[in-house]
Image (tube, rainbow, N blue to C red):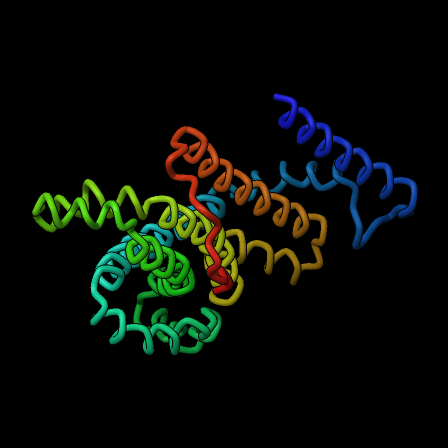
Length: 258
């Protein structure tokens, strides 16, 4: 409770400081720097012009891309992590592809809208960039199953599915969860980036349109919406982690940059 109170007080202090600093230091009419109350007032205009549609579009792309990366990353990670041969085969390809930023795929995926597959281009970018922390953390977690668990697996002569369910996944869960948490943040960043570059509905596209129209108050208000959306998604993961302490593993050493 004490930590939560301190967090609330720090946010309130920052908000009040922001409001006072702008009103005292920046004379009206303000063109580029706005107080918090002015930005919040812009939300009414944005909601009237369909802000919820843009929030929904961005959220669907973020969650959809995240789920795709999670399924692909965990599935491949389980296979590669449990097979030294597959690990040796896949590692060079992974090391080659991983440094490639998702933004480098833009010239390639830009072709998809021309084929009537515009929406899929968003998911290609999000899934590609979000895949790596899930894949690497899953490989790490699976390959580091404790010797006690490995001994129990050999002694009990379990089927592959039983090994996975009762030993491998529980042991690897903290690492996998860490990778998923990193991937969710990356998914939102990449969804916004893709919308900025490709267009259509979404918070990224809205931010670009407002900037092009020199509506900087609206643009900053949209950025504030994006920040709140990211905070909400991260808070949801924190709640899951708090209610399931066994998901708290050691911090991943994997670089989470897309």
